[in-house]
Length: 201
Ligand code: ZN
Image (cartoon, rainbow, N blue to C red; front, side, top):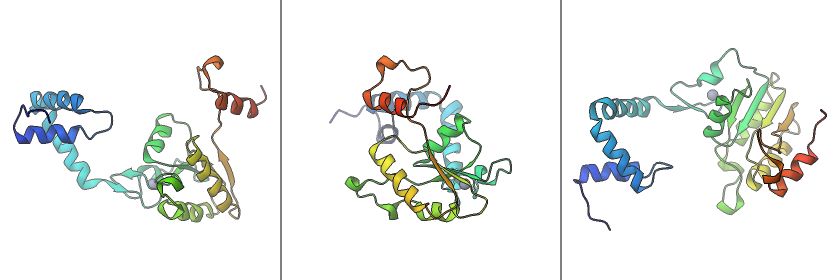
């Protein structure tokens, strides 16, 4: 146990910051010090922003996105193509796809992927609500934008089976060469998936 260099309040701030992803104890210390030095400029607005977020943040009852309104901004956006539901494991994936401006549909956040090893079963994920949304006549395609991992693909297969009766096209993301990628650096799995899923030029 290292000796504390500051009072318990500051130590507590450091400990809390150290729990953030990407911040170890060392960077947490640096971040805390930075906040303290910029008390007026940074710490006060950050505290206010955290409080507001804490009060207002809700989980969208339709898609599972996180927002300050419910249904969320994406679900209520009239310019969205209502025929497409992009299914993602996590809100972070939804935000990543939005940043990429890749698709103009609406989303469905599962809240994870099936993982028998970690004890995550279908009842732990928002799968029933996805199946029920997919049965809406306006929906024609469900895109399974899930991780290219064993759990991600197991989940994709499971959902595809369940959507058999819904009158929708079920698609998944392409696997293959990343944009700007060099073939020589790719692993065999990626390279072989890219060859199998080749498209006409
Ligand atoms: Zn929503």
